[in-house]
Structure formats: structure tokens, C-alpha cells
Length: 172
Image 1 (tube, rainbow, N blue to C red):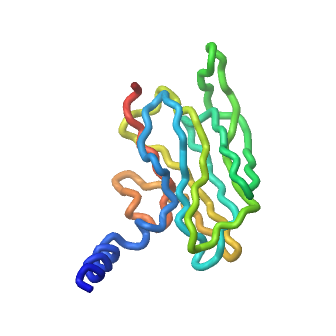
Image 2: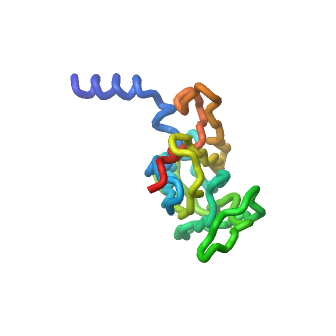
């Protein structure tokens, strides 16, 4: 009984917003590396199943390749990058995936799932500065927009619907 009270009090102190975020499983990656992004989706929208996930790819991230997910259709919205990125053999990469989406599946509100994609991180991304992946979760009834990017001096916990954060570490 006491253990349940302590666990309940701890959960109350943590707050539901910390537990509700769509987050990246691995929250750090070095500049100039390849990164496997695993978006953790903890629930639907207040009892309603998730039926689509959209993620915006931030500047400095290129060569995006989504992992197919059984029961879901994956789509890539492509376009021109705002700058060139270096590719294999010195080739310039000038366009690519700007947004990914998974749809057609169904993630019940009381289940958890993951959505995976691989990316390259630009070598000149500044260490110690985060990148944000805004995510929109569409449900049978409702939408949750995990798109808030912290203003200077703020942190993710200051927001109700923060974007998924990836902290950039020094190039290895």
C-alpha cells in the first residue's frame, strides 16, 4: 500500500506532460553521423486511436529513409533544401525528404508504438544545440500537434506539446 502511494506521488510530481510527449528513443547524435530516429508514440488522442503520424524534417538533416511499417502506408514529401549537403564522392545533395508520414494503420489509445527512419546529420551542425522534429499525430477523433519549439531560455518541459528533441554532440 505504501509503495503504491509513493509511486503515485512520484508520477504526480513527474507530471503527465512528461509522459505524454512524442519523443526520440535516442536523444543525442553527433554532427556528421548517420542517425536512426525512433519516434516513440505513447498513446492516441484522449481515448481515440492514432491513425496517422507526420514528422517535419529539420534543416541540417538529409538523406532521410523511412522504415516501412506493416499495416501503415509511408509517404515522403520531397523538395529543395535551403542549402547543399555533401554526398558520397563529393556529390552535392540539393533536394530530398522534407516531411514523412505514416497513415492507414491504427494505434489504439491504450497501446504504444514506434515509427522509424534513418537520416544523415550535417557535419557543420553546432554541438550542444538541439534539433527539433515537429510531429502531428492524427486520431480518429482529434489531432495532437507536438510542434512547440522552446524559445531562448526555455526548455521542453515548459510546453504542453513540445517537438521531439535531438541534442547534437561534437563530430567524431
